[in-house]
Amino acid sequence: MHLSLSKVAFTFASTAILALSSSTHCAASSEESFNITPSAGKNYTLPPLPYAYNALEPVISEQIMKLHHDKHHKAYVDGLNTALTGLSNAKDADTIASLQSALHFNSGGHINHSIFWKNMRAPREDNNKSTNGLKIDKAIKEQFGSTDKLTKLMQTRVLAIQGSGWCWLVLDPATQKLDVITLPNQDTPGMVNKVPLLGIDIWEHAFYLDYLNVKADYVTNFWKVVNWDDVNQRYENAVSKSKN
Ligand SMILES: *[C@@H]1O[C@H](CO)[C@@H](O)[C@H](O)[C@H]1NC(C)=O
Ligand SMILES: *[C@@H]1O[C@H](CO)[C@@H](O)[C@H](O)[C@H]1NC(C)=O
Ligand SMILES: *[C@@H]1O[C@H](CO)[C@@H](O)[C@H](O)[C@H]1NC(C)=O
Ligand SMILES: [Fe+2]
Image 1 (cartoon, protein in one colour):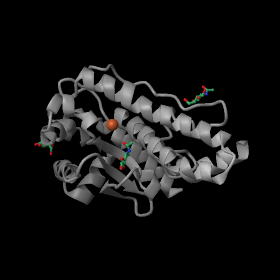
Image 2 (tube, helix red, strand yellow):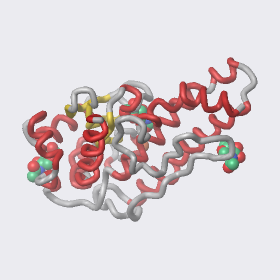
Image 3 (cartoon, helix red, strand yellow):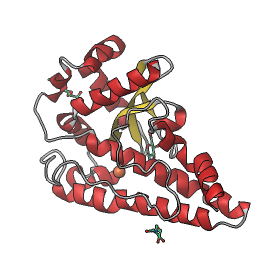
Image 4 (tube, protein in one colour):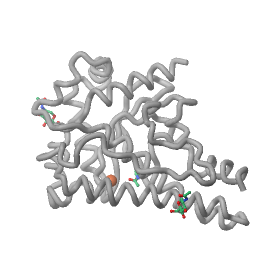
């Protein structure tokens, strides 16, 4: 079953995972938590938060971070492992096909959240100005006019999403230009050949306990916790890989 595991996992689950691997243009060679080729007996694991659960307060509470990371992200990791285990035990194509949506959904959730945690850090007032002096600052100005205009654009786009979803700042490796995208279904940026740099999670589990139904306040406050150094590092990695 090893052959079919790696083959089918490649087809169904790993498009985005591979887009995050060092073999293609990829922001996330630093994404050490990804097992790129999980083989039988090697499950994915939940990467720890890169800071304390309460580090993002008052923008995002300890309670949300505990639930979001320990329950929701863990559920994607568990779901991915269950689906991959099912795949390695599958005896027929129908069974393999039936695992597709679970692989797609849970690998997407795992990728999204692994990036999202690192996209954030302890709040800073006037954090938009933290792009000053970074390489991405020039690209942001060229593409969007200013960091403030970029944040406003992403706010508008993320608030236009009906129900659950994500909005991403990405690099298009083909053009080397930044772009803002929102994607339907469970697609992650890697699945559409874009390198994810910064994501905003607008699923209710990301904000509801703190902001109730006032999504706009969550999205406005989000900019205080954006780790522009991380976003910039992903940008620099992606640019240098796409030049190869
Ligand atoms: C991997 O995860 C699956 C699903 O949770 C579980 O059944 C299996 O025992 C795990 N394998 C290992 C080696 O931990
Ligand atoms: C992952 O992000 C994509 C957008 O890039 C979104 O469509 C999808 O719902 C997300 N998946 C999960 C499980 O959060
Ligand atoms: C930072 O961005 C937010 C969101 O667009 C905006 O409300 C705020 O005014 C900006 N702050 C500065 C100092 O540019
Ligand atoms: Fe989430």
